[in-house]
Length: 347
Image (cartoon, rainbow, N blue to C red):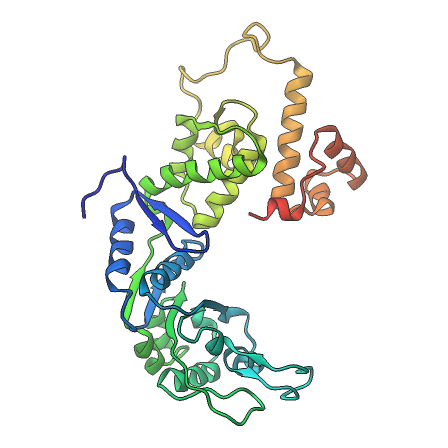
């Protein structure tokens, strides 16, 4: 497929989930999905945490032509005792607290797609339960008597090396082969510099619009710092970084100074400023803001970063900043940040 960084590949995965890619490997991934998704063959999507496996799963469903819903379940947070109830549903009185009938994920996804996220976290017992259904057996709600046929396309997603887990005995070999229809691997963010450039700008624009503020450009020095970072948290970490920068940037250009403090510290420890980038000898004669304005700007930036770091929890943010909570509340009003909340920061 031809590759043109000036004309990135754009993906609409439905339900407002969109993506843009300039990296050839990612373009090939989604081109393959578009051409193979129509079959009923299961998909196995692999990749590190935060690389965007959900977007790939939504793309498979979007291109499959299936009319049913896409239902996703996080297997990592599913205790053994609840596996069957979550997957197959239950009738009233099936267990303590089951007052109403509830359809399981297979029923909800009938005619559509079921995404089993973090599949490798299921216990061997739960894997055995799942395998029976994937082999074509009808489902039965807990406490129910009737059996129900189902037409569900399965997509499994994991950040685990399933072959290695099979070798260790932590994952059933027969289930692994049952799920291995088509395999899609999403490479980590650090291996896709072209996508970092693209996504950083898109995320910054998105966050600025959400704040009702004008769009800003990304300075070359800031982009170099973004490209230099290994991004162990992948897309999620980059999204957090750009949300922080969007909050604190009050200029026309986002620079390194607007990046979270740990990134600026790491940058300063590895490389000093070049002569062309060195600050002027005198901030006053260079027409900079007054000292009080500079101090207020730095204080505001630290408060915003602490709130982002703690998900909007003012008590934890105050501890992080080393100040009493009542002082933080007063400064939030002083810096016009009182409207920041958990919901506003949980992007």
